[in-house]
Amino acid sequence: MSGHSKWATIHRKKGLIDAQRGKIFQKLAKEIMVATKGGSPDPNENASLRLAVDKAKAANMPKENIENAIKKASGSADDTNYEQVRYEGYGPNGVAFMVDCLTDNRNRTAPMVRNCFTKSGGNLGTDGSVSYMFNRKGSIIIQDAYEEDKMLEVSLDAGAEDFEHVEDTFVISTDQESFTKVRDALENAGVKEFLECSLTYVPTMEVEITDEETKERVYKLIENLEDLDDVQDVYYNLKEE
Image (cartoon, rainbow, N blue to C red):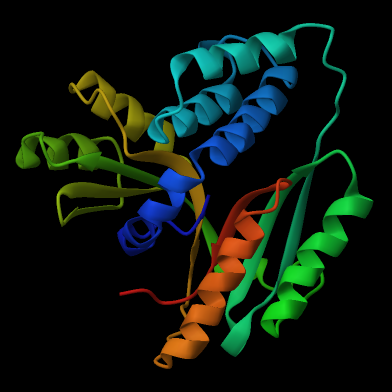
Protein backbone atom coordinates (compact mmCIF):
# COMPACT_ATOMS: atom_id res chain seq x y z
CA MET A 1 0.00 0.00 0.00
CA SER A 2 1.94 2.90 -1.26
CA GLY A 3 1.68 5.96 0.90
CA HIS A 4 2.78 8.42 -1.74
CA SER A 5 -0.67 9.14 -3.08
CA LYS A 6 -0.23 10.31 -6.64
CA TRP A 7 -2.81 9.11 -9.17
CA ALA A 8 0.10 7.93 -11.36
CA THR A 9 1.14 5.60 -8.57
CA ILE A 10 -2.37 4.20 -8.18
CA HIS A 11 -2.81 3.81 -11.93
CA ARG A 12 0.57 2.08 -12.34
CA LYS A 13 -0.10 -0.31 -9.49
CA LYS A 14 -3.75 -1.17 -10.18
CA GLY A 15 -3.02 -4.57 -11.69
CA LEU A 16 -0.62 -5.39 -8.86
CA ILE A 17 -3.18 -4.37 -6.26
CA ASP A 18 -5.85 -6.53 -7.89
CA ALA A 19 -3.48 -9.51 -7.91
CA GLN A 20 -2.48 -9.03 -4.27
CA ARG A 21 -5.85 -8.03 -2.85
CA GLY A 22 -5.82 -10.83 -0.26
CA LYS A 23 -2.49 -9.70 1.19
CA ILE A 24 -3.63 -6.07 1.25
CA PHE A 25 -6.79 -7.04 3.14
CA GLN A 26 -4.64 -8.87 5.72
CA LYS A 27 -2.57 -5.73 6.28
CA LEU A 28 -5.66 -3.56 6.55
CA ALA A 29 -7.18 -6.01 9.04
CA LYS A 30 -4.03 -5.76 11.16
CA GLU A 31 -4.29 -1.96 11.13
CA ILE A 32 -7.97 -2.15 12.15
CA MET A 33 -7.14 -4.55 14.98
CA VAL A 34 -4.37 -2.33 16.36
CA ALA A 35 -6.66 0.72 16.24
CA THR A 36 -9.47 -1.23 17.95
CA LYS A 37 -7.20 -2.35 20.77
CA GLY A 38 -6.09 1.24 21.27
CA GLY A 39 -9.58 2.52 22.02
CA SER A 40 -13.26 1.91 21.47
CA PRO A 41 -14.47 -0.71 18.96
CA ASP A 42 -16.90 1.95 17.69
CA PRO A 43 -15.34 3.94 14.79
CA ASN A 44 -17.48 6.94 15.72
CA GLU A 45 -15.74 7.06 19.12
CA ASN A 46 -12.25 6.05 17.97
CA ALA A 47 -10.59 8.38 15.45
CA SER A 48 -7.77 5.94 14.66
CA LEU A 49 -10.23 3.15 13.99
CA ARG A 50 -12.39 5.41 11.81
CA LEU A 51 -9.30 6.25 9.76
CA ALA A 52 -8.37 2.56 9.42
CA VAL A 53 -11.92 1.61 8.43
CA ASP A 54 -12.09 4.42 5.85
CA LYS A 55 -8.80 3.22 4.40
CA ALA A 56 -10.11 -0.34 4.21
CA LYS A 57 -13.35 0.72 2.55
CA ALA A 58 -11.42 2.74 -0.05
CA ALA A 59 -9.51 -0.46 -0.88
CA ASN A 60 -12.86 -2.25 -1.36
CA MET A 61 -12.32 -4.49 1.65
CA PRO A 62 -15.59 -6.36 2.30
CA LYS A 63 -17.69 -5.11 5.19
CA GLU A 64 -17.63 -8.59 6.73
CA ASN A 65 -13.81 -8.57 6.83
CA ILE A 66 -13.81 -5.19 8.57
CA GLU A 67 -16.35 -6.29 11.16
CA ASN A 68 -14.48 -9.56 11.80
CA ALA A 69 -11.21 -7.68 12.41
CA ILE A 70 -12.94 -5.42 14.97
CA LYS A 71 -14.57 -8.40 16.71
CA LYS A 72 -11.31 -10.32 16.85
CA ALA A 73 -9.45 -7.39 18.41
CA SER A 74 -12.30 -6.76 20.86
CA GLY A 75 -12.25 -10.34 22.14
CA SER A 76 -9.86 -11.80 24.68
CA ALA A 77 -8.70 -14.63 22.40
CA ASP A 78 -6.29 -12.47 20.42
CA ASP A 79 -3.27 -11.52 22.52
CA THR A 80 -0.90 -10.52 19.70
CA ASN A 81 0.72 -7.17 20.38
CA TYR A 82 1.93 -5.22 17.37
CA GLU A 83 4.47 -2.42 17.55
CA GLN A 84 4.61 0.52 15.15
CA VAL A 85 8.09 0.86 13.67
CA ARG A 86 9.40 3.21 10.99
CA TYR A 87 12.50 2.62 8.88
CA GLU A 88 14.10 5.38 6.82
CA GLY A 89 16.59 5.03 4.01
CA TYR A 90 17.65 5.72 0.45
CA GLY A 91 16.97 3.74 -2.70
CA PRO A 92 18.54 3.98 -6.16
CA ASN A 93 19.59 7.46 -7.27
CA GLY A 94 19.09 8.83 -3.75
CA VAL A 95 15.30 8.42 -3.64
CA ALA A 96 14.23 8.88 -0.01
CA PHE A 97 12.03 6.23 1.63
CA MET A 98 10.00 5.95 4.81
CA VAL A 99 8.66 2.48 5.58
CA ASP A 100 5.96 2.13 8.25
CA CYS A 101 5.52 -1.30 9.79
CA LEU A 102 3.32 -3.10 12.30
CA THR A 103 5.29 -5.97 13.79
CA ASP A 104 5.26 -8.36 16.71
CA ASN A 105 8.98 -9.03 16.24
CA ARG A 106 11.45 -6.25 15.40
CA ASN A 107 14.25 -8.78 15.09
CA ARG A 108 12.40 -10.35 12.17
CA THR A 109 11.29 -7.15 10.47
CA ALA A 110 14.48 -5.08 10.48
CA PRO A 111 16.67 -7.56 8.54
CA MET A 112 13.93 -8.11 5.96
CA VAL A 113 13.55 -4.36 5.31
CA ARG A 114 17.33 -3.88 5.25
CA ASN A 115 17.70 -6.71 2.74
CA CYS A 116 15.25 -5.02 0.35
CA PHE A 117 17.31 -1.83 0.40
CA THR A 118 20.61 -3.65 0.03
CA LYS A 119 19.40 -5.69 -2.96
CA SER A 120 18.32 -2.47 -4.71
CA GLY A 121 21.68 -0.79 -4.15
CA GLY A 122 20.27 1.46 -1.44
CA ASN A 123 20.75 1.60 2.31
CA LEU A 124 18.91 2.15 5.56
CA GLY A 125 19.51 5.41 7.39
CA THR A 126 19.08 6.56 10.96
CA ASP A 127 15.83 7.80 12.51
CA GLY A 128 15.02 11.21 11.09
CA SER A 129 17.42 10.92 8.18
CA VAL A 130 14.67 11.40 5.57
CA SER A 131 11.43 12.09 7.49
CA TYR A 132 12.15 15.84 7.44
CA MET A 133 11.59 15.69 3.66
CA PHE A 134 7.90 14.74 4.10
CA ASN A 135 4.79 16.50 5.38
CA ARG A 136 1.72 14.78 6.83
CA LYS A 137 -1.23 15.38 4.50
CA GLY A 138 -4.73 14.13 3.89
CA SER A 139 -5.39 12.45 0.55
CA ILE A 140 -8.94 11.97 -0.73
CA ILE A 141 -9.79 10.62 -4.18
CA ILE A 142 -13.33 10.19 -5.49
CA GLN A 143 -14.84 9.41 -8.89
CA ASP A 144 -15.79 12.45 -10.98
CA ALA A 145 -19.41 11.24 -11.12
CA TYR A 146 -20.33 14.09 -8.78
CA GLU A 147 -20.94 17.70 -9.84
CA GLU A 148 -17.50 19.28 -9.95
CA ASP A 149 -18.35 22.82 -8.85
CA LYS A 150 -20.22 21.46 -5.83
CA MET A 151 -17.38 19.12 -4.81
CA LEU A 152 -14.88 21.94 -5.24
CA GLU A 153 -16.94 24.33 -3.10
CA VAL A 154 -17.60 21.73 -0.39
CA SER A 155 -13.92 20.74 -0.22
CA LEU A 156 -12.52 24.25 -0.09
CA ASP A 157 -15.13 25.48 2.40
CA ALA A 158 -14.15 22.58 4.71
CA GLY A 159 -10.47 23.52 4.54
CA ALA A 160 -8.99 21.57 1.60
CA GLU A 161 -5.68 22.86 0.30
CA ASP A 162 -6.02 21.66 -3.29
CA PHE A 163 -8.62 20.19 -5.64
CA GLU A 164 -7.71 18.66 -9.01
CA HIS A 165 -9.62 16.90 -11.78
CA VAL A 166 -7.27 14.08 -12.78
CA GLU A 167 -8.43 11.66 -15.46
CA ASP A 168 -11.81 10.38 -14.19
CA THR A 169 -11.29 11.38 -10.55
CA PHE A 170 -11.27 14.35 -8.19
CA VAL A 171 -8.07 14.45 -6.14
CA ILE A 172 -8.35 16.48 -2.93
CA SER A 173 -5.45 17.38 -0.66
CA THR A 174 -5.72 18.65 2.91
CA ASP A 175 -3.48 19.40 5.84
CA GLN A 176 -3.54 16.93 8.72
CA GLU A 177 -5.88 19.06 10.84
CA SER A 178 -8.54 19.56 8.13
CA PHE A 179 -8.62 15.99 6.81
CA THR A 180 -11.52 14.73 8.94
CA LYS A 181 -13.58 17.87 8.37
CA VAL A 182 -13.17 17.64 4.58
CA ARG A 183 -13.96 13.91 4.52
CA ASP A 184 -17.11 14.42 6.62
CA ALA A 185 -18.20 17.39 4.48
CA LEU A 186 -17.93 15.30 1.32
CA GLU A 187 -19.93 12.49 2.90
CA ASN A 188 -22.62 14.98 3.98
CA ALA A 189 -22.65 16.30 0.41
CA GLY A 190 -23.55 12.85 -0.91
CA VAL A 191 -20.24 11.11 -1.57
CA LYS A 192 -20.86 7.41 -0.94
CA GLU A 193 -17.52 5.91 -1.96
CA PHE A 194 -13.89 6.99 -1.73
CA LEU A 195 -11.18 5.59 -3.99
CA GLU A 196 -8.70 6.76 -1.38
CA CYS A 197 -9.25 8.35 2.00
CA SER A 198 -6.20 8.42 4.23
CA LEU A 199 -3.54 10.44 5.96
CA THR A 200 -0.29 10.07 4.08
CA TYR A 201 3.17 11.60 3.81
CA VAL A 202 3.89 13.85 0.83
CA PRO A 203 7.47 14.79 -0.11
CA THR A 204 8.49 18.43 0.07
CA MET A 205 10.97 17.84 -2.77
CA GLU A 206 11.04 15.11 -5.38
CA VAL A 207 13.82 13.24 -7.16
CA GLU A 208 13.42 13.06 -10.94
CA ILE A 209 14.84 10.01 -12.69
CA THR A 210 15.00 9.97 -16.49
CA ASP A 211 16.81 6.66 -16.84
CA GLU A 212 14.14 3.97 -17.19
CA GLU A 213 16.34 1.18 -15.84
CA THR A 214 17.04 3.12 -12.65
CA LYS A 215 13.36 4.02 -12.30
CA GLU A 216 12.40 0.36 -12.59
CA ARG A 217 14.85 -0.46 -9.81
CA VAL A 218 13.06 2.06 -7.60
CA TYR A 219 9.68 0.54 -8.48
CA LYS A 220 11.06 -2.92 -7.74
CA LEU A 221 12.21 -1.75 -4.31
CA ILE A 222 8.74 -0.33 -3.62
CA GLU A 223 7.10 -3.60 -4.61
CA ASN A 224 9.55 -5.72 -2.60
CA LEU A 225 8.92 -3.63 0.50
CA GLU A 226 5.15 -3.70 0.08
CA ASP A 227 5.31 -7.47 -0.33
CA LEU A 228 6.62 -7.86 3.24
CA ASP A 229 3.86 -8.87 5.64
CA ASP A 230 5.04 -6.45 8.34
CA VAL A 231 5.09 -3.40 6.04
CA GLN A 232 1.95 -1.26 6.10
CA ASP A 233 2.90 1.79 4.04
CA VAL A 234 5.79 2.91 1.88
CA TYR A 235 6.46 6.61 1.27
CA TYR A 236 9.03 7.90 -1.22
CA ASN A 237 10.00 11.06 -3.09
CA LEU A 238 10.36 9.77 -6.66
CA LYS A 239 8.82 12.24 -9.09
CA GLU A 240 6.14 10.45 -11.10
CA GLU A 241 4.45 11.73 -14.24
